Image 1 (cartoon, rainbow, N blue to C red):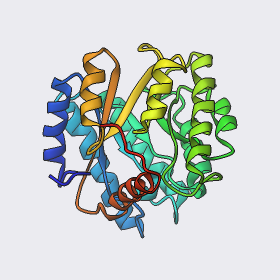
Image 2 (cartoon, rainbow, N blue to C red):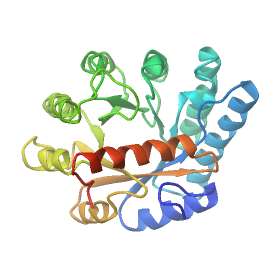
Image 3 (cartoon, one colour):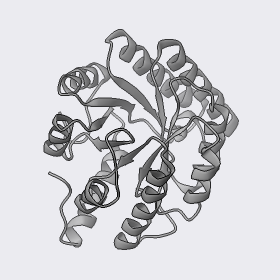
Length: 265
């Protein structure tokens, strides 16, 4: 397989079965994004629905990750929300959760609207929140009235802060608020300093916090934390249109190298 993704749903399912056997949950994520027209958006919607059905059929401990750009969020926001309705509805019928990526700043309002639209979803919707955006604390407060579970990340697009260490500080600040609130949430980071802070300073507990990692990163850490009883998740991207996704991963590693840093082993 490629380091960052698998070629198709069949292999993603096999990877998830292996991870489930190690006590690690998964999120199956078709890598298509930035649909250019309604036909492409409809085709990608079918891929998300297929992933939901595979998770149920194979009895996986898994959710399905969705990007609004894949559903036409850039050129047809209302249509994208309707396509998301189809995916979430399929998930509710089959008891498979849906996780929604926030993507760039231009999609934040639409992602928030989606969260309100599916506030009563069961299993609950998970929404990515990006620490490098000024609005994130306020958005989290607004989400508190819904059943949406936040997944806190530093951010992989363009944000209001771009200094690596400032973004780390913002992440700690938002995570501390979430821990104090008592809300269940997930964190998506491969930053050793942030994981160490959560475990030893920030007060993360096994009952409140899930640690989410990507395929191709932190494999030793995933397995070790799962053995220790932490709730651990691996995001498993799959599909042939992985160019934009892979480029973000390479850019992340290049940034770390420039700073003399390494991700979690």
